Length: 144
Image 1 (tube, one colour):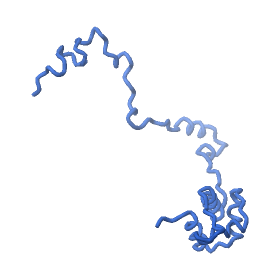
Image 2 (tube, one colour):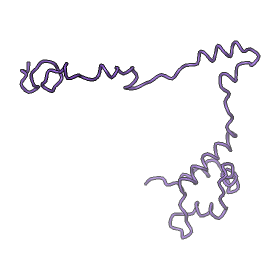
Image 3 (cartoon, one colour):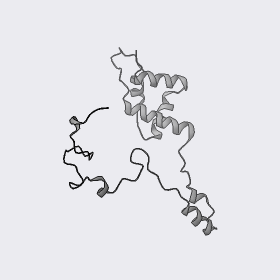
Image 4 (cartoon, one colour):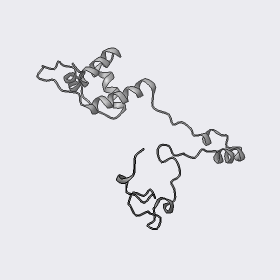
């Protein structure tokens, strides 16, 4: 049996000992408004006629609001240049010059060959169409 969003929401409510007012406050931190009657519908049993399933959006907003509720709002981290004292312009210039340049990774990390080296010219081709320069088609070569 898989956990539904309602089950996750109920378990978080119990584990964190949250009341309806707390949940409404948490959701208001991310500007998501829910009434007490809607919360009551979320916490009912599956077979109850007034049961409402918790949508992904509500659970996502609740978790984001919970982070703000527990940790406080996110603070902007200062960049390296902002951390340097602004009374030393020489140090600022030195750090600005040392900033790493993003390097390529993956299969295209190396510099590609120039187009003139990648194209096999007709005068360089042996005419058999396989581009190996031996003059024999691929199927007529002897295998070792």
